[in-house]
Length: 485
Image (cartoon, rainbow, N blue to C red; front, side, top):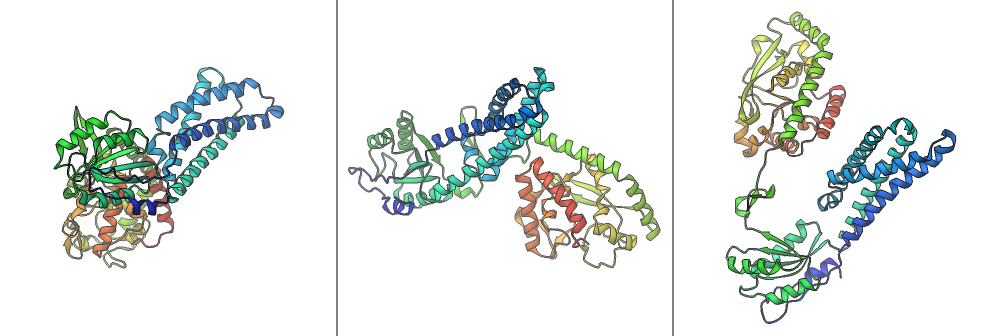
């Protein structure tokens, strides 16, 4: 039975004395798939090691104990790496192909790192061929990445074919919410959950017998029970939960929080009290330390490597026009903290605009000859690495805006209600918005919305890998993008 037919046959119950219909639905045997993936990961990597070893064994006179020592070390390393990456956890297995492959490749790298560590500790590293290890590692990377791409393809194909991962029974306090909620669950789960029945909570009007519900679970027809709209049926819901804890079934509560209009970040527990997280700090304590170390390393490296260039720019500015070499401006930083940002002066001193009342435009007459060159390659931003060392900024983050900056004559926060969300992280010299084309003046509300959306995406998805992508793309924009002015 396909998914469309299943939805058409699903009926809401209006008589408690008649057992409700259960829609039969094919499902993906996830446990068997996971076991197959575990076996394929292990045996495939071991087979690659054996094949490569045999290819090089005779000409390079390998000792046979290298293979067995390597396989044993790989097995130990793989178990540790798979556990740390939660590689066979439901969340990773059901994620998109890119995320699944990333975790698999990280686990592979950790495994070979552990292998080398064990080899060094057991004094085997000197007798193990580097050619064999490198070739084995390369083959394992391709194998493990390919398996996860194939897994994602087969999973999506099965879901599109009408199969599901969980067969759910939806119980609500009022039957009028049963059908709409069931449709929402199937749509939002991407087909992973198939609703096989929707009915009232036992004990309410238009309900099902609780004994029938328990029997359906025991017969293996239901994988998950979803209870919603229970605010007016607390006692009935409590009795139902008591009975469901006696059987092997997943139970999910969907509280009515739609009126709050806030995204749910996660479910937590404070002692014995259940709690729902609506927001969290963008970076954990460890991630804050990692990002700060990244900022200090990159800033010190850039300052040292560009010191001759900094001197040359200083001389050029002094020769081109009168006034100071550096230009300072007050800008908004993390949590609206005001700080002074430093740049090389690119405008005539008497035409400076410290409050950014007039944004710089293309062919702006206020910009000097040297200033145009500096702005074209963003060399005027180099002094901001001092701001990074001081802790006012990061190398990568949302660009800080001047205090008086406007969008079509209106303050930024007035134009966009969520504008302040971009200030949850330290501002940066470059950012996700900049490498996605958001440079120059903000002369429309749509440009402001897109820039803030990209800034918030960076904050919500921060990682060292994303920072590396932005750095690489920034260099490409500096060299080949002619839109800067």
